Amino acid sequence: MIFTMNRTGRPLPKNFFDRDVDRVARDLIGTVLTVDGVGGPIVETESYDSADPASHAFERRRTARNAAMFGPPGHAYVYRIYGMHWCLNFVCREASAVLIRAVEPVYGIDTMMRRRGTDQPKNLCSGPGKLCQALGVTRAEDGASLFAPPFALHRAGGAVAIASGVRIGISKAREAERRFGLRQSPFLSRRFP
DNA sequence: CGATAGATCGGCT
DNA sequence: GCCGATCTATCGC
Image (tube, rainbow, N blue to C red; front, side):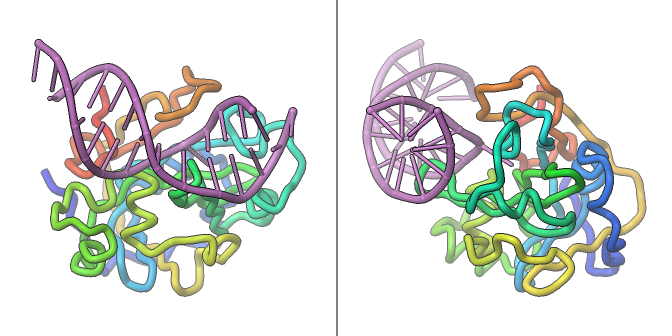
């Protein structure tokens, strides 16, 4: 049913993001993300690497926008999409990154409801743009370390039922199965088939 | 419930 | 100019 986790999880190891991006994307499912104390367990991710036509680092130079992707692992890459929403990524090794697509709202729900303008829990963090609005993530966090405030990442042990499928909203490399999620979570951006 | 239109703008060609 | 790792409202069944 609903994924529950308390604050007793331990912080992620410093080398957590210096690994294969698909592995990181899987391991992030169930990891508790908070931004200034607001957040909850990550329930949906997607992976992108520099050999991936859908990636912002694919056959491109480093620019002002994608600079964080070319930086060291363990930092945030935040960019604006469709001229109005923010998307939060966690940078991994070799210009790869994990897009955070959905979070189960657990901590600071009142703050999330105010920022999102809705009192529907399932509509607070069920999408990359929504969760940035709910958690207060903007360009100000682009390039910031994931191991320092406002970010905090904790993970408890235990197995998690992972679903995988094709990524959402892209026009290139649509067939790649690089979307991962907590199976049956009510807080996904979309259900897995 | 599924499909679709419109909003809106920075980065890149 | 074009278009996107999206969201919301609104339409139709």
